[in-house]
Image: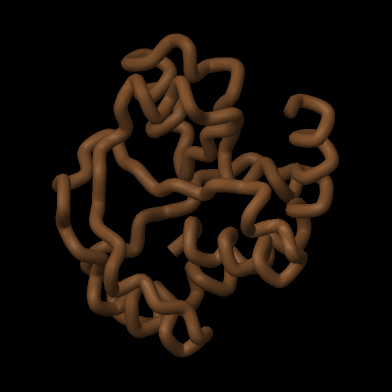
Length: 140
């Protein structure tokens, strides 16, 4: 959900071609489709993720990334442990809005939790997205 929302946010600003947004997990079931409720909630926002397939993070993805955004501190620590080169380019998703909290995985939860998470992700992107773009311009 976060990747689709961020991609849409970048697209609305005419920046979709300048950024590549990937989604990968530490324990993702390779090739798995998105959760039905995630598809439904994003479809209500005119975002289609039906073609998305889960993939695991790899050394190649880490090397190709300028920024790696983690949903939880545990994910961030595990990523940095498994891929030490990722450490200087990782951040928590919530850090965009100058906060530091874990964004929970809604897997298995009712639709209301997916809706609330989607709204939270949209808020975080809106609150910190412009700041992130400025920082990335200095890095890139």
